Length: 406
Ligand code: GLY
Ligand code: MN
Image (cartoon, rainbow, N blue to C red; front, top):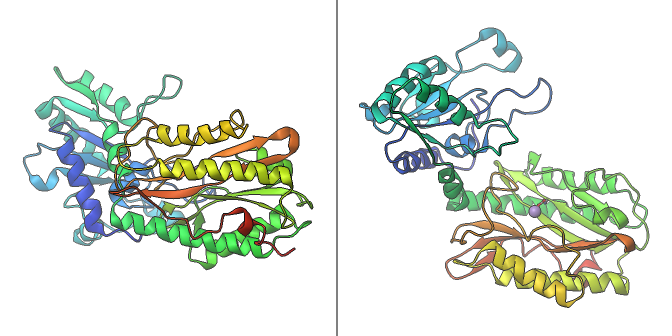
């Protein structure tokens, strides 16, 4: 079994204990998710499952929460698929159940998933309350896995109800622990290495693809094993495409480039965007847009503090852009929470609290002029305000004119 590095096993156990208490007697279950197609990269566990266990490679696993189980050691149970020696030849060998596995995972109880129907029925009869922990699906999508299961369980047990507790894990995940913040800082440091490596190869004519490759080489040299998301290396007109992915055009003299990227370290993401002229000199118009976006970003970052909300930061940025004449040119929101996911769960109208990490990334995009600017930093909410975790990555107009080779 492979587990994320960087977070102590005892911290996962504490997260599970906290969730168990927050369930206030209701039964809950968190699914790890099913198999990815063969040869299509790593299996990515459900992020709530990953947050609660750190387990990276147990397809089909789940965590069962039974707060009123008579045996306190069986209140939080890790449930694993049965052994399958023939599949192990393809996917790798799996440990047997036992003390070693309990110590490695920090669970006091590890069972096979075949036990679940019996345990679930006993627990539901005792508690008469089942709590949905996975995000509830919109009506256009399949029903969430736990709700689907609970409907079947409740239909078989008189008086058993189903509750919505899908905010619990979101709220827990939003406030990062010191160990999590350390991983995000490391991801940002690796991202900086990649960005600087890309800059060292920047000059008109070099292709976005070559720069992309330099970026990834930098991430890897700095210890990152995977990207947090596909980087956006967009020059000229491509810079106005918000999630541009092709990264395969030659850069041209006079282009502005938007670079939006993040390395992942021990499962945690960075997400940084810089905009810079490929030839080392902003045109007057490029500089005008750049300065407006930078000013908007500074205003939005100042708005990030305990008790404020992301929508306050959004409004602060839009006020500046409006004044500069670019009010209608930011089609996206001001940012998002950052953590295990690049877009970590979190809502615009919720109050920010110390320990939360958010991105602040205003932009202005003028497709008719082939100018796109976005500037993004990763901001930790502190007791007194905030700390810009990515402030050591150059970003001023003067610095952006000196990053390349021309
Ligand atoms: N960095 C890409 C995004 O936040 O959507
Ligand atoms: Mn972002």
